[in-house]
Image (cartoon, rainbow, N blue to C red; front, side, top):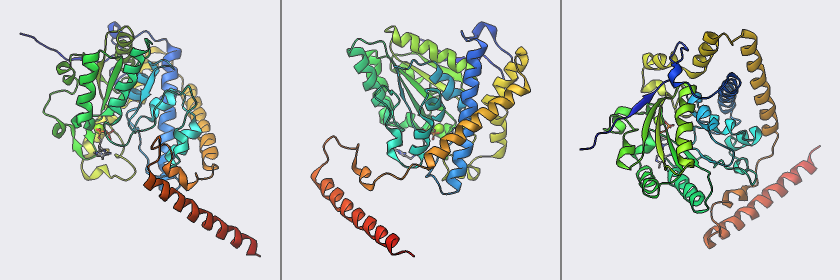
Length: 365
Ligand SMILES: Cc1ncc(C[n+]2csc(CCOP(=O)(O)OP(=O)(O)O)c2C)c(N)n1
Ligand SMILES: [Mg+2]
């Protein structure tokens, strides 16, 4: 008879006390780097949320509450590894050094913001739930075939585990022993569907067992624990040990997107109970406990991230909108005839609109 267990890892408790036996190999400068990007992610959220309310950008997805889960896991990657996000992983993009202006440009609805340089190994956001998971498996498979040591880390939500894509991807990765890390951000909700209605499994991590890979649960609001388990999974994948499923237990403190009102389906008490476990304050408690915190440092980080976001917003807002025919680009390698026709029609109309605008300008007093 086989028996299985799902381990749960926490390094930092909510008061900032460390379980020294579990402490990962990180010095204070590195932890402060993670903290800085977590604050940057929070500030980016705050500002882009406001821009959406002012009608200057489209629907926006906040990462609030999930910063440790995203930033500390991405910190464990090397630049040549693949980062495959869903739509909530602003922290992973920012940690990976994504161009801040392009990041905002993409939320403005301009797909040119998603096109990185040739070395960029961060995929664009994926709106269709779970569709990015098989893509990550394909990337990992390609790395294995090429005999490279690079891994792919794919993010998805608790809701995504109910999609066929999730199961197909894990099955393939397990059979082929691929260097891929499945990182489930279990933020307890899939829009208004709670975790309890998503699956009858006691944990999401245990689904790994059926696919022949390790599954582990981690306190997703504990940056040190997230780094530790992700680092270990990446190391194993790099050394040919195959995939891992990580279930990061966290909480979406904001609405699902700017088009949602979470107060209609979840209680204020629940939100408050998770607010107390919030990841940024948790790291601050850690620095205080260690005696490496000063209020000046906290204020300085606040100024730095505000300046960085301010400058990026100013530049992103100054970029003229993309030409409408961009709608047709980067979808098919070879555009089907029906879309070629539509594209030509749109270009003709757009030309006429531009000519009319020019004529109006010339006629103006
Ligand atoms: C294939 C597909 N079905 C439905 C949707 C609509 N939808 C958008 S987000 C979402 C819930 C996702 O929940 P989860 O995977 O837990 O991620 P979270 O939003 O919590 O980060 C759904 C159903 C979609 N985008 N794609
Ligand atoms: Mg979710």
